[in-house]
Length: 171
Image (tube, rainbow, N blue to C red):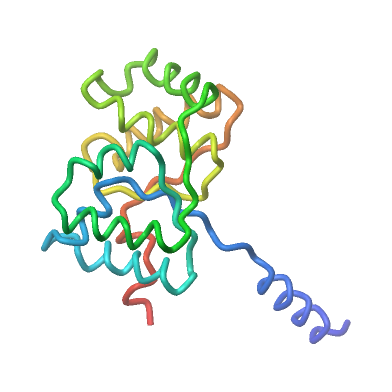
């Protein structure tokens, strides 16, 4: 058995791995300016800048950022300039959203959070990042969203905080 040949194959295969697509909700952008979260939100932004990950945003993110302070909108503009993938709400997204709504995963007040999840699921992103520990990055909510995803023929969505995703500090 030629071990070197197998190792070389594995290395070549590893090099060909595609860049992971990371959906960024609005809280991650605002987190760049929050003492508690800035280290990891900014670390994730650096990961996007260095090409470690491909940022994915949506028209929902746009809408929410429009109401944010100027410095948050400027940070978002930096992300857009990195050629972030842009998702739009369509019929398929709304159909999944209504399935979440039917299961009462979140109340009507937090419909945009369900739209973020539906957009990321339909687009098949690798991970959705958020600092929203009440409605998104929470074990029971993740299970509920993924249960609906699976029931409707979609793969489960990885949902994590930027702290769990960024390569910042992993040197």
